[in-house]
Image (tube, rainbow, N blue to C red; front, side, top):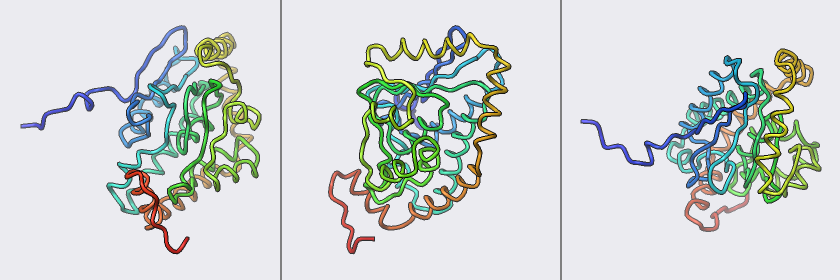
Length: 268
C-alpha cells in the first residue's frame, strides 16, 4: 500500500491564474517562505517550458504566497543530502530555471511584496522586470551561514554595479525597496496596497505591444548583453556546490536551522 499523503503534500507548489494574456505563477510554500525546493524548481521548469510555447500568454508574473516573495533554496532539504554531486545537480537545475526565464519569448515580471533573499533575490534579478512593494527587502544572505551566494551573484552582478553587488554578497545585509530601485534591481516601487495595480499596468502596457516584436526584441536584448553567462553559471554552480559540501557551510546552516550561533573556529 502507498503511504498516506499529508494535506501539505497535496497542496500545489505553484498556483496559476491567467487573464487578458497575463499568466500569474505564485510560489505556494508560504510556511517555508516560498523556498525553492527540488520539487518547486521542477514545477517551475515545467510550467515555464509550457508557457514559452503558448502564444496566448503575453506576459508572465511571478509572485509569492504569504509573507515572503522567496527566501532562496530550501536549506533543510539541502542539509539532508550533504553530497557534492547532489549540490552540483541542484544548482545546475536552479540555473536552468533562471535561464528559462531569460530565454522564453514572454517578458517576465517579478511581483515582490516581501523579502527576496539568496536564490529569491536571484529570481528577482533574472526576471526581465520587477515591481516591488515599498515594504519589500532584498539580500544575498548566504554568507551569514557560511555560504557565499555564488549563483545569485551571477544574476545580481548583471543588475547592479560590481561594488554594490559585492558589498551585498560579502555582508549579507538587506537593502530596502527604494535602494533596490536606485541600484537597478527593480523597476518600480509602490505602496503594498497598490502593488497589484502597478503590476497590471506594466503588464498591460506590454500586452498592448506587438507580440512578435516583444519576443524578437527580448531575444536580441539578452544576446547582445550576454558575456558568458552560461559559463559563469557553470563556474558559480561548481563553486557553490564545493562550498556547500564544506563543513563551514554545513555548520552554518545547521546553526541557522537550530537558531544558535555557528561554531566556526578558527574563522575560514
